[in-house]
Length: 446
Image (cartoon, rainbow, N blue to C red):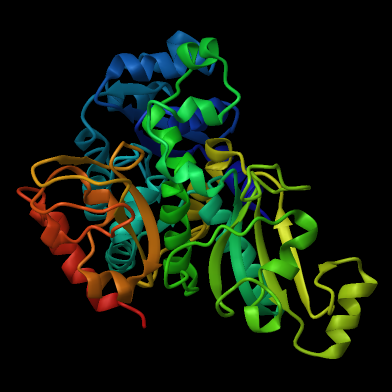
């Protein structure tokens, strides 16, 4: 609880925390919106393949033009301004940059950027959960060996869930489940980029004017983002994914402790120690009372009857028995909070959530009947959704991770809801990523 004072001391000593941002999309824009108001934090450079898009992000979040027109990294360091470049390697080559924020959302690019940053001796804040769920455990191992921090991004839900899990364990409660809320019911699974705006309250004018990516929003709608994020949480905390994927039980705030406990105790979980989603819609589409659509939660059990009595005395939300309780955080503010991860890495040497084992995987699963010769189109597209399953199951199925399911050709036909195998597709490039995945199997946790 002292990051702000630690940063103030750095600033007073003329040593601001210097960072580089890769990716100027929605998340990157939110980071920039706050960065200018955090004294002692200097965004030295922003790398984006489209510098015009990056300039648009600065304009959108109300930076004065003169603050983002540095001519080079050296100019940015000397003037306190920010440099825009289309080459992420320039950020790795700047010795004064301490931390790289990877916010591209592209799993292959994110992996390569993280590897380059770690090799350059820089901390990595991995906004890119798509890359993290694919090879995060291996990246974290490499970072530890290099003496730098590899961290999930605070403000995003996985880091907040890791924080809640840490609270449960540090307090000595028995951890039962961790999860988040989500606007979901089963029919959403087959949403496409053409239909996605039907599930949101945005007007056509808002969509046209804002930084809205239909594939990205569709990833949230069809459950893919949930699978990616919950598998990442499992890898960071040692919790399990359900064997047949997330169940999305509908649950409001008042029901969390009742629903997210083992079925043997009257709940909906296949066992204790699992991740899942509290759906904000009933199966018929009705909105759940007191839903936690934007929140995160943990459920936990009292270790003894005295603690159980204290749960009641201090107003904790519990199940009917009083043994199971829930704690929650109602909102997450995405990139507006990510400076917490940067400062934690640079000032305390600690991640705000870190994949440590290969416990779970987010695997490509077919949205329909597709024939050999057709191409998959990856996260948020028309062809596949992601299913969160135990890593041991993924290895046994030789499953195709969702992060490698973009623009790959089918060698065999698929049926609806079939997990896609690497044997079903023709992989012709990016074999370095496949090699990393093979290496990561050393970190498989049964």
